[in-house]
Length: 192
Length: 231
Ligand SMILES: [Zn+2]
Image 1 (cartoon, each protein chain N blue to C red):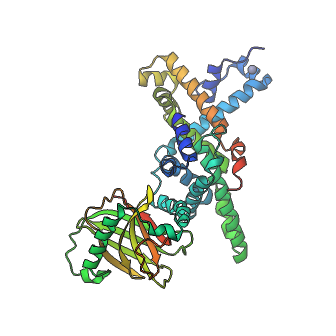
Image 2 (cartoon, helix red, strand yellow):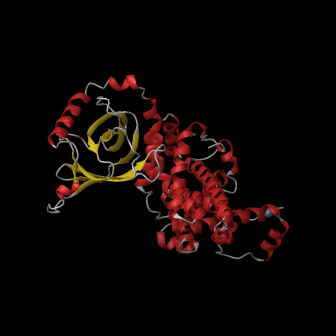
Image 3 (spheres, helix red, strand yellow):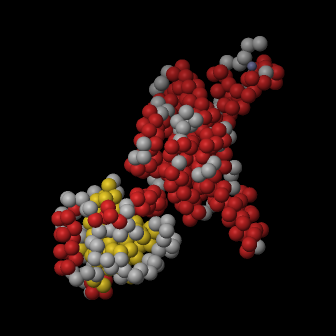
C-alpha cells in the first residue's frame, strides 16, 4: 500500500511521471475492464485514454482514504465505458440498428463483477509471497490444505493461517475497492 | 450461541470439506455465520477467476502517447507569444546545429529519392504520432529513426496550413526544451537528418507543429501530432 500512497502523493502534486507509472501499473486492468464492457478494442482503447486523461484532470479529487488508485481508475473507466455505451445506443437508434447491437450487450458481464475480479487480482499480487502462493495453489490448482502443505513444504498450521489471512486481505480490499461497494469511491468524480 | 470456527468456514468456502449435521444446523439458524460464509464464497470465487488476469499484456504504448498528447496540451497553450522569444540559452547552439543540418539537406527531401537504396537500414527507435485534441482524429503519422541518424516521417491528414509543418524533438520532462529538425510536405513520407549529439533518450517526444511564415524560428505553440520514441 505504501507504493500506492507515494504514487497518489506524486500524482496529486502534478508529477506527470506518476501518471505514467499509474498507466504502467494499472493501464492493463483499465483496458481489460473497458474491453469486457464494450466488447471492441477501438472503443476500449478510447475509454482507456479518456480514463487516464480524466484521472489527470481530476487528480486533486482522488482521496486515498476512500480507496486505492486502481479502484479509483476503474471507477472512472466504468463511467466512461457506460457513457460510451449510451452514446452508441443513441447512435444506433438513429440508424435503426438497435436490434443487432443489443445481443452482444446482453452477453456482457456485469461491470461490478469485472471490477471485483480486477481488484482481487491486484490484491492477490500484493500479498506477502507465501500467502499469495498458498492461495494460488488453492484457487488455481484446486489443492487442499494438506496438498498445499506437501507442495510447499510448509507446516499444515502455517498453510491454514496463510489462507485465512490471505482471504481476509482479499476480502478487505474487495470491500474497499470492489464494484459492488465501489459506488462510495465513485462519488466525487461523477463530473469527470 | 457459539459461532462456527472461522477455519471451518474457509474450508467450506473452498469446497474442501462439507458441513456435518451440527454445522449445517447452525448455518440454518445463524445469519451471521451464513453471511460470513457467503462472503468467503464470493471472495474465493473471485480469487479463482483471477487466473486469466495474471498475465494481462502490458498496456500499449500508443494509448499512452495519446494520453500524453492530451495532457501536454494545456502546457502548450500556456505559452504566450512573448515568452516564445526568450529561448533558453542552452538551446541556441543545438538549434543552430539543427538549422545547419537542415540547410545541408535543403529542407525536406522526398522519400522517393532513397527508394533505390539498399534496404540495409536498422530502425533504432519508432513512434506513432497521434493528433492532439484540437486536430481531426484522422490525422496521424509514424516515425522511424534509423541507425544512420536519419528520421523517416510519414504523416497523413494533417490540417491545411498557410505556413508549414515543422518537426521537433522535445524533452517530455521539460516541454521548453526542444530541437527543430526540419519541415514536412503535407502528405507522404519524408526523411530528415537527426543532428548529431542529440540525446534521443531525453528528446524523445516527436512533435509536428503548424508554423506561420513569420521568420520566428521558435515553436509556434500549435502542435498537431505528437508521439514518444521507443526502441
Ligand atoms: Zn453463527
